[in-house]
Length: 104
Image (cartoon, rainbow, N blue to C red):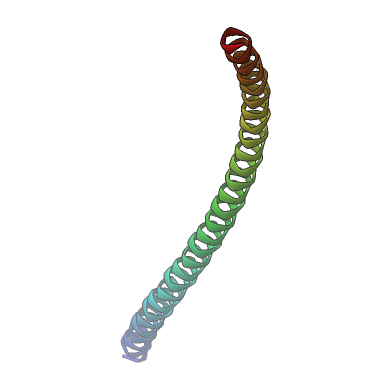
């Protein structure tokens, strides 16, 4: 009878150990899932920050290039206006001269 009693005790202990192992495994699994989720969230946040920083950099470069281009266009336009004014002034002087000659 002692053997059956020992066998039952051994079985109950094995069942208890198995239940404990299942509980520990579930707890460890939950912990691992939570840790993975946390790392995933952290990685996503870092990627967002990096993307935002890169977008700001690209925007700044685009604005700088646009300002340079606008400055260049403005300078070219001013030069062309001055050339046109000079030509017009010469033409006005010539026209005035022709008018004065035709009156005299």
